[in-house]
Image (cartoon, rainbow, N blue to C red; front, side, top):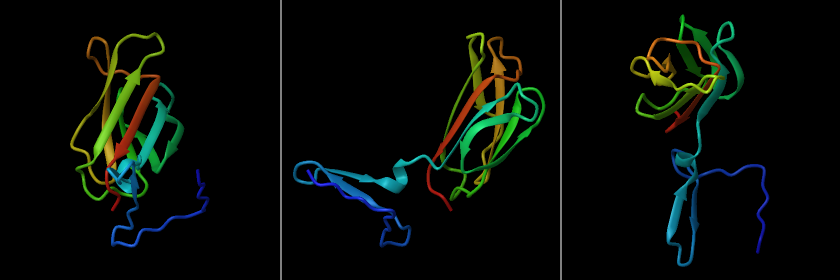
Length: 135
C-alpha cells in the first residue's frame, strides 16, 4: 500500500473541490468539499452568554434570553440552504430539544432550546454542526 503525505491539496476547478475516486474499477466517487463539516460548536447554554466549549468556523454566540441563542458563522455559507444538525440535552438526562428558531441565514443560525415539557430552557449540552457550501 502507498502513502501520500502533503500539507495541502488544491483543486483545479472554480470551486476548488477535490474528488476522491475509490474502489475496484473506480466505482465510488466522493467530493471532499461537499462531505466535510463547515462549522460546528459545542456550548453550555446554562453559562452566562452561552459559553462555547469548543468550535470551528464560529465567530461568536449571542444569548438572546432563556433558551434562545444565535450562532454566528465566521466564513459565511453560500446561502441559507445548508444542513444544520442540532442536539441538546440536560445534565439530568431528561429529554430536551434544540430547534431552529427562525429561518437560518448564510451567516447565522438562531436556536431555541426546550426542556421535556416544551418550555424554553437553558440547557447544559448543546451541539450544532453545519454542512453545505461555503460562500
